[in-house]
Image 1 (tube, one colour):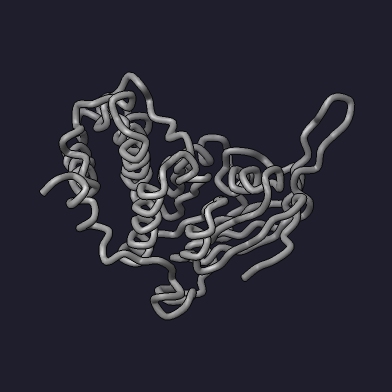
Image 2: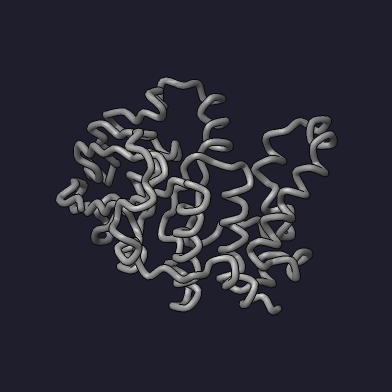
Length: 262
């Protein structure tokens, strides 16, 4: 079995949209709110003035749902995603994760949350070029354990990483560095790195924006399968209509405000 066949075996049967599986809400077994943004505003300094990128945005994310955020470039989509994922701070408003105000946590508590409960998949992968794929996938654990702790746990964690590598059809690239991989392979490494800590929310910022149409379809189906089989919660910023249609909900952002939810 070649790499393409192995990857297809994992993601098939292909899913064009949640609507084809009985409606957008199929697979949602709970209405529990896992993350809530309340009246989020974000202002950036620009020259002698300011730009208001977000203007009082409020939304709720349910446990186990795929939520897509769409809208034109410059609408504030990525800024909102980064604020919800603790990569940026709002100028006003608050974000609650399991009823905890994220920005009342200490810096250490925020860092631990980012590294364990949250995970991130970006358009440009953000892999470490000097590390092979195994070490790139293990990076979240490497930075969270002490030297002694890593020595004690490294074998178990490497086995866990190898399970993901095999599941995503990357075992033949084990010793390769990112520069030796295709764009689709690099994104699969990034997905494995996101999954390694078993996060509760995976934030995706244009995860297929740098991929061809075939690989985009593969990543799209993988996200749906991870949600359906493993109950993973995804928040996805995307311009891709097919990705958005695979969501339980779509939020449209224009000029820093939510103008539509469907």
